[in-house]
Image 1: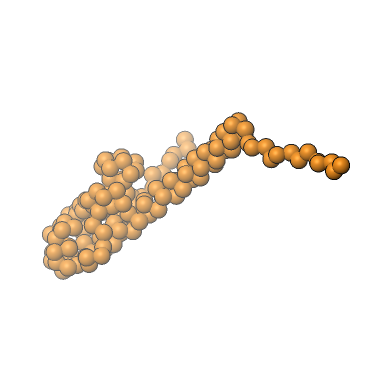
Image 2: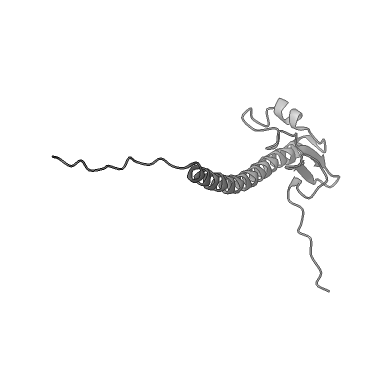
Length: 136
C-alpha cells in the first residue's frame, strides 16, 4: 500500500497580519506625502518669485518708456508687453500687486500661500533687505 504524505495546505494570512501590513503602508504613505507636499510648496514659492521678478522687469521697462505711470498686469498684457503664455497670477491663482514709488522703485508682490497680504509669507520682488538682528 502506498502511503500518501500529508501535504499541508498553504495557510492564508490572518486578518491581523493584513492589518499590520496596511498600517505600515499607510504610515509610509503619509511620511512620503508630507515630504512631497513640502517640496511642492517650495516649488510654488519659487515659481511665484520668478513670475514676480519677470513682471517687475517689465514694469521697470514700461515706466522708462512711458514716464511714471504705474501699470497693472492687465495693462501690460493689453500692451503685449507680457506674452499670452506668461502667468498673470501667483501659484495660488491670486493676482500680483504692483506698487510704484516716487523715486522709480517698483515692487511686485504675491500674498503667498495664505492668500493674505501683509504677512511673513508674502513674496515680494525685489526681496526686501534682510533684517539685522542685534546681539546686544
